Image (tube, rainbow, N blue to C red):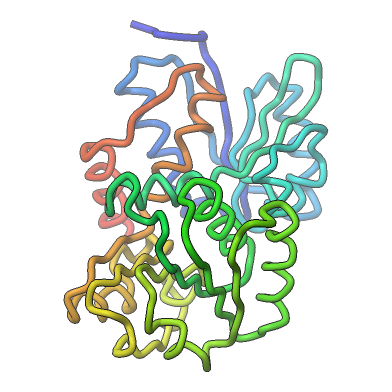
Length: 290
């Protein structure tokens, strides 16, 4: 039985895109909820991005999720943008409206926060000190989400290039002037870690094919949790090291699942749930691809 809209189609666009879990993720929800729809992978080179978007819009797609390297280009071509997208300067969700307008959002921040809620409890991060590793688009989303939804006490952004961390903090500070934000390089890890309640790696270090993040966790309090937004592999070297020391660990699959919820609702008209069954299905896909 179909619950909503007949034959709705959405896409996931990137280059490459074959590795994306989005078709499997949305496909699980489509089957679970009895929705007549499809999530189509769209491989598009950077120089073809705008033409592909126009093509699928004219073809009747409801919208697309956007992955690397197109998130900034997606933000640039949108007619309407949500605050999260404006803060990141990037969009991972484009919605095609009946009047021809394209709306852009970035759901990474809410996806990360909801994942942390699942793992650590609803209000656990409020009033806590957080260390964010990295200063790219994912870090922007993390800092915004932690402050906007989590009301944390302090966020310290560490990056190899301190200037980039400073730029991130200055940008976020314009939209969140009450946020307590500090920056530093990885050389200042020991000091930043000393009072941290949670550490979040937003860099690509440890991702399949990339070198692991070399980080000595000894300065980190035993009670601190460690999150890595990488989901392939599920257990990065950083999380293995953290688990061996007894820290609570949070992999990137939770963020991936939760950030997809607003997209599915926008595309197919019903809000799905993140469940153990969904996680098990995606873990199975990852293992089959390994």
